[in-house]
Image (tube, rainbow, N blue to C red; front, side, top):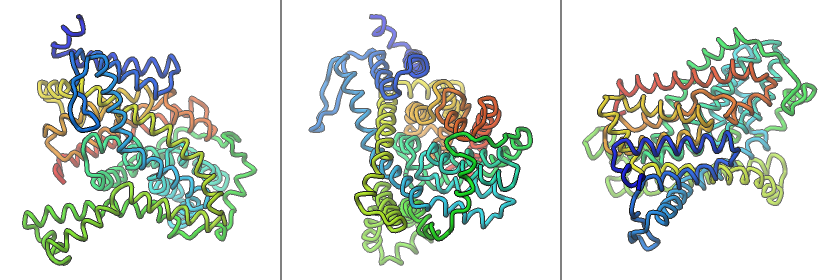
Length: 497
């Protein structure tokens, strides 16, 4: 009776939000519950707290069916989980395979070496920053850090200094990509929640992310000057092995073109769909370049025929399949592996991807439950009453959840679910790419000991917990704030891009 009566109060959705988020925090951090189970139970709790008498649930035949409050709550959680899995599962699995192939074939090592050769050893920090930023597009952060930290250690041995700078450059490039670029699970889920064009999210994430990385590197240099982390034999990489890693002959590595192609080509294909979409919109409005592009392809009919193929190969799943096939061929050719060996190597990364898909889909179920409980509408009303900047609000909501429970992906899912109704309702006042970015940067704020990334960096780099707090935690928080400021400025200068 209390729930049903209270559900009519305007503040009740905030109670639902607070209770369900508190449950996630306690379940994961105190009860050591697996995030998948914690998120599913939190979603069920949110639906039950919503206090609805009946739920209208879409059936397999597309018809709506009214269900009781209890059974309907279970069905709504299942629907939210299924919808999220449909949107992200293929992308995450393919990204895991590409990442494995880049490492096993030596392609990632090749890209880093070319960047070092371009920037020079004196600017090795910049080389690590930009090579990590580009390479980590399809690679999960912990995997990317495992790949890059031996190079940072080797550079420290070679130069005798700047180990903190090398580590923070890797962290800066890798975490910005993790929060800003599809096909990472958090950005994929936010794109789906905000109904954002994937190509636009890639362009926006790359541009705003790159600007943030540039200024973030200045923070890395400042941290390097105040915290000198010594090189310690830790993290599964012995100092005696580093000489072999850095001295590996170029002949054992694939060419730079084929090394970087599995990453760059999917991004280009996905972005191409956006170019065609903008050209079509421009032609409809009489814009010169849009009309010229349509005419160059034989008018409306010819343009439509070409666009159909571009939309197909530029679909995120097809683009990643193409990138996956290239990476598999490069691996097989470079290492002389047969299909059986390649298939064996795919097992572990796909197992990891499956766990990420489950957790992310459970987060989608939680977000869906919050929307059904009216949390998004309540936050929107609060923002209007107090004239809150929605971009800042999206960052704050995501950052609070991130600091509280540790997971960047979970915080992005929660932030996107709360802010999505406002974006859909047109209350944002600028392009939704800016909300996408504010949520992504909010998910980077305040990483500490409840974040698995904290411990990955701590264990593999050889830093102490105090050193990790003084470097990693400060770097990510600074990047988060810098990213928010860049997003705010661009949203005012180029509101509708």
